[in-house]
Length: 259
Image 1 (cartoon, rainbow, N blue to C red):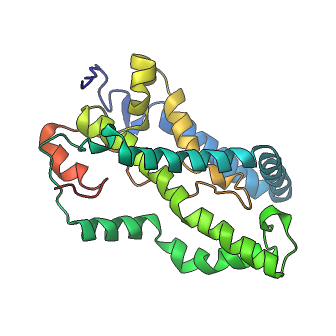
Image 2 (image 1 turned 45 degrees about the vertical axis):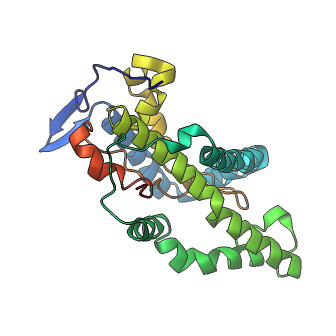
């Protein structure tokens, strides 16, 4: 049975106009202040900032590297389960939605957006960095050894293989399903609606949390565990509420076409 969600929240209802720009109040201003404080602080106190950031990264790796590994594996298992579960047959955009692009075009766009500069630079820099102990070796093996070579390639395959794509897919599915099938705002907060109800719109806490989680690896990327350092597939900055008339063209950009 399909569950319908009704909400009175309107995208942009809390926005303010500043210098001709439409800004969310107070999320934009709080985020801007935090970014400015961080950037200015690191410029004025570079040595202290490096010490603090290295310490935060080291503490996170020492205490939560297992969380990255287990979490990424859970995402992969969840995506595999969707292939066999009945919910995997749900068509984004509704039963009448049809893709605007072919499967080949969809894969080309997704691969280019998901990898992009990564394959041009990190495909070489990352395994070499692991092998030479540029920024640590996987499992602290001895650098410049056959074992370091094998572990470096294994870490790269883990970082660029199924695990990041599974995380991209889950985030994209959560955005697309609630936006195109449930008609809710295209924002991360919509995915929390079944749990929090109308409380997911209350206050900036959820948006700020999602903003901070957007690039967590900028502060503490593990040296050998996967770190979500690239953007998810779907965009969360849409300023309009999806409607049945817009679902056809939008839904096809998230999942491969099902004809």
